[in-house]
Image (cartoon, rainbow, N blue to C red; front, side):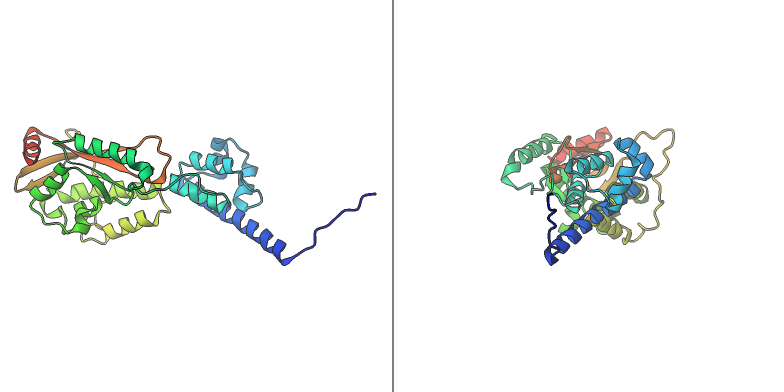
Length: 284
């Protein structure tokens, strides 16, 4: 007859048990927050993720511990940004999956050179790269000349952020024709980014700051309804160099597996008519 050996109950084993329980509870809370943010019921998410509703319920309540693969799987199904997928992993007791390096990091030298090449390739078009907080990371000479030609002396903290440049009363706002129309579209875009990253404090703080500017809180909640003649909404600047009609185009890095790279956006301001094209060529 074998004798069952029972490990003695110690303060350390109790602490380990409580720590594991808290980890599962933390993950369950975060998973539930993302499910609610993406407006999935438990049944709907279980169906999309191809797992049982019972298992999903156990994960949310902390009764079951997810594998690393399950955390990443649910993160992809819920379209969770890489930064927040790392947070889900740490909440479940795992190490982060995705790196987060500064663009100045030597290991990203090739990426930075590629972005610089793309930005500088638009020789007659203002082009720049911004991060998730709309802060300027890279800009070509035409973008810098455009700010100078606009005839508005921008403070560095305003010029270095795309949101502030458009919405701040001391930014480009005084020379933007039909500012309220454009500002409504910009705020709609910012709100959409907050909805995509609902737990990003930096992004939410940026939206709150924007609404603190005069006239922004009173803007319509929805973007303007286009008329039959509208094809695209240009940004029109009444600058000393002449009237500039610019169309914004945004590109992102496809299949990025680094937090920093996933959050970068390349923005170009294309001329919407021939006179604007001529003025932009003159700036270079």
